[in-house]
Image (cartoon, rainbow, N blue to C red):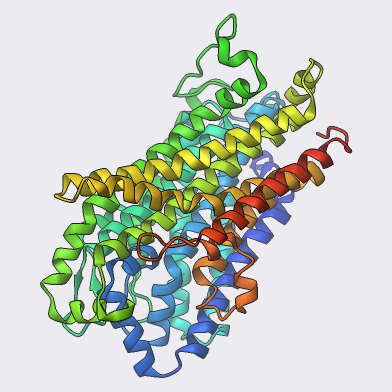
Length: 539
């Protein structure tokens, strides 16, 4: 027990600032959403109108969450819960992988393993740390909701729902860390599962059944496949119940026990998914710095590519189904018609445009992750070996930036093509394939800006590259998606590249914005390459 507590204290000390930023950021976001709803939609009629419009638009339900009444708390929970739960899930997965598989890669776990402690002690301490982090998050988030003007009982239930999602992904990441051979792979797989939970929840909610008064949606059974769907089922501000969270608790206990059993039975450094041995000699592509950058990125890109194709297929496959369901309801059709100028609206295009926007976020994440590989190579000493050869720093970073840009384009294009192909198979026109391929690519310029910004951070302040790279991407998403709701000044919303993205095919492509974003991206990479020549390598 003494060794367990010592390891737990050491992990807490290592993560005290990272966890503080995560928890404080999520709590501030919850406070901002609650305060914005209370201030911007204080009138009951205004809240009822926005809920009715949301119920009428499956794209909003998919992206935001499950409408559940017109109370202040109900609208705030519908608006912010899904995204808050994703943040809690990501916080939990990064924490667990950082103290498990990543520590095995860097050698810290080997040093601890040389002491007389059980193999699973470190992982058990990490799981407890994750649970404690989510408990603190629950307390601060509940206080933030109350400070924002929401009822105490509902706020506590809502915060517990968020904490329940985080708790599930603590255990999910613990299992994934035993399966994957590297910390990078474990982080990628765990993050993909968080995104998958969000998408399952979104699909189940979008295919749900609206109430006759258009005040709530009863989700389909698909939502119950997602931990985020379990959190929504608590209905904190209408009919609060903690029973769905028993599923979260059961999943945490079962998966945590499984992860500890796996860690107890495997050797240090081994994994359920074996790491492939490399070739004795490099192929043609591996003999250039660009080929090396591509080889290091291709497995990760494959994961983002698969996610974008699945999302695109869902967008194209579900859009006609949702449009048909809306067409059969006169009230919903009338509300949809009011959502677009001229009194006519195409539910299929609105729904697909919303999902293509999410695809732009995925593309940005793929590009940022490719650039972050530079920091991992530098911190772990491999960059020093590479740069000891006739490879310049400019060539090294430039090649990785090029591969990152290619990753962004591939992910956006793949999602657009998958969307168009799914629509074509559902009876659409052949031209839809090219139309939606272009609509997907419309999100690439904004995502490329984050690639350039991350490269610039790496060149100027390498030690904070990972934190700022992901952090700025999240901030850009929040400003672009929630800026208007949070009453953020328009000039501040405009700081996010996603604010300038054209939601094709609903909105005509803004060519000027495209060229401006591309110019900013090119300038950012150019400045990064110049700045990199002025600093030494760091660990």
